[in-house]
Length: 205
Image 1 (tube, rainbow, N blue to C red):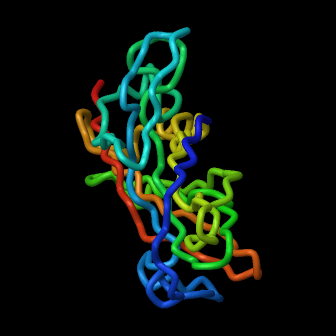
Image 2 (tube, rainbow, N blue to C red):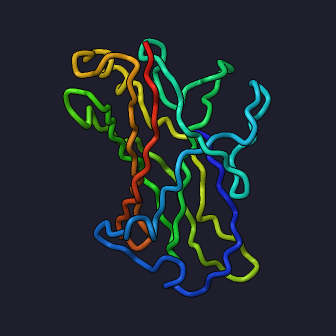
Image 3 (cartoon, one colour):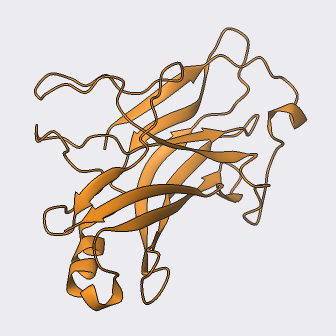
C-alpha cells in the first residue's frame, strides 16, 4: 500500500468551524468530522522501476473505474499497465476533528451487482493503519489531516467467491459497484464511520 500524507496549512481555529469535536457512538453527520473523499489515481504513472508521482492535495486525479475480467483479475486496484505495481485505487480521506487525531482502522466493503441473485453479493473488511492528524495546529505548523492511501479494497478472497459462484451473477458484461466507508477511532476513543463512496467496475468475459 502506498500512502501520500498531505501537509495542509489550516486557518480554521474554531472547533465548530472545523467539523465539530467528538462524535461518539459512530455519529459523523454524513462525513462532517471524518470524510471519505473518493478514489484517486497517480498524477503520473511510470513504468517500474521508475517511481510514480502520487496524488497530492493540489493534484489528485480521480480514478473513475476500470474494466476487468474475473478470469484474470485477483485484486482491485490491479496492475493495469503490467509493470509490477498496482495502478490507481488511492482512497482519499480527511479528518475535520479540530484537536484530535483519527486512527483509520479500515474500509468496510460491500459488493453490489445489479441483476445478481442477492445483494450485496458479499461484504468484506480491509484493515488499514493510517493516522490523520488534527485539523487545527499551532501557528507555524502544518496539519496532516488528509491522506491518499492506495488500498486493495477488493481482495483475492472476494474474487475467489465470485468465480466459485457464477450462478449468483448476471451474464457478462455487468457492472460491479464497490460500496465503501471508512472506520476510525479518535484519540479520546470515539468511533467514527465515514460517508459512503462507490467505485464502479465493468466486468467482461
